[in-house]
Length: 101
Image (cartoon, rainbow, N blue to C red):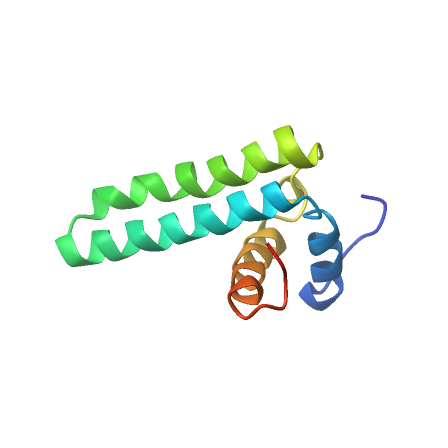
């Protein structure tokens, strides 16, 4: 990453570029759905221990996508907040059909 990003608006196009591999995007999408399921399960069961799985699942799916399919370094190492935001925005954009799987 040669550019410094100070706004999410500037960062998001870079984020999408770093997710050009279909399998990587699919793994992010699946991981985000599972994270949502875990959060809902934690709420419905009133058992916060479920939340321990959130970073494991969220990062696990994403990092497999990056290291094995995209073959790049996850942006979360340099831009953790923008990267987290990017994951949710990309998930939503996939849901709306703005980003293809």
